Length: 142
Image (cartoon, rainbow, N blue to C red; front, side):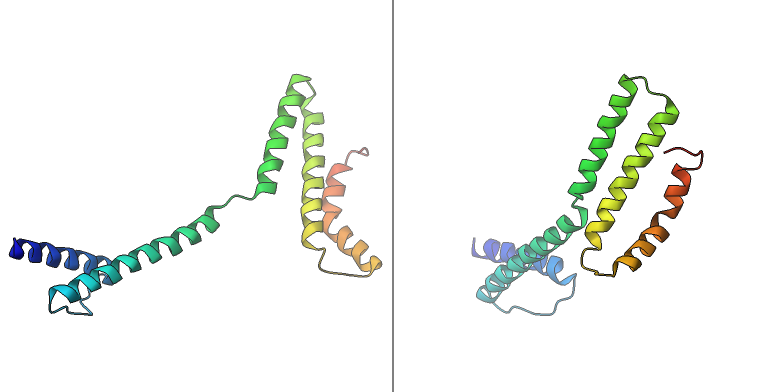
């Protein structure tokens, strides 16, 4: 049993060493106590790497709640407009208007930290939204 237990320990050691060191044998354990301690350290290393990677991936794939709510509101608006049998042109104008308002609201939140004089704020807004205003007012109506 002692040789079977030592063989199991060596196998476990080699397995964890392969996982944690990517196959490089940086340390060589000479007896069972060193192997057991090395296995504990390698197991702790695996747990820490999993925790750190899990946390990073969680932040990477986390969805923007404001954008999710906006998409849900737009889907509800589409259902509402279709149920009221609004014309396609009117639906598109309403959708463009609400998208414009949403973008404007998001950009205003992002630019709260920048304090410009009112005259420059007007010029920036004119530059940012001129294309949307021209598109919206192309046929002479809002």
